[in-house]
Image 1 (cartoon, rainbow, N blue to C red):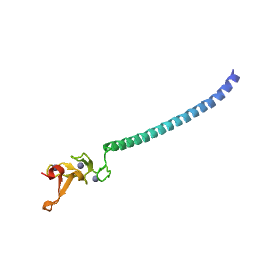
Image 2 (image 1 turned 120 degrees about the vertical axis):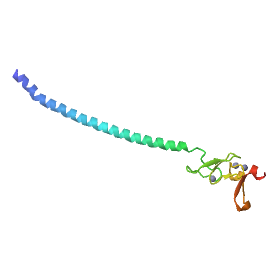
Image 3 (image 1 turned 30 degrees about the vertical axis):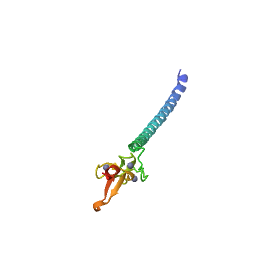
Image 4 (image 1 turned 90 degrees about the horizontal axis):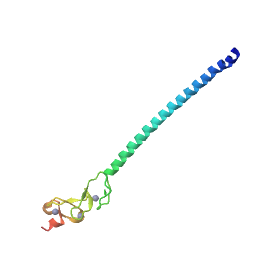
Length: 128
Ligand SMILES: [Zn+2]
Ligand SMILES: [Zn+2]
Ligand SMILES: [Zn+2]
């Protein structure tokens, strides 16, 4: 009885120890994987937020954000549509008609230097 019990008893602590060590290692790996996964998800979330922000900024810029007069594209420059020919021109190119106060591209407006003051008129107002 005691002879059969002895090897079992001598093995048991070893098995238990091995088992505990394995469990310990597994726990470490599991927690490392958790940390890794968490880090990855944080990185992914950050990248996602950045790409979402970037695409949102891109969406704010219309695809026609190009001045049809000077051909400049700018995200900061305000664009206006010519009331006469419907061209999109930047704030540096369009002229506001002195009479009707609408925006016109340089081709559809005439600059008058009467009274030494620069005045813009659209083609419909310049003759009237
Ligand atoms: Zn322009
Ligand atoms: Zn025009
Ligand atoms: Zn006008």
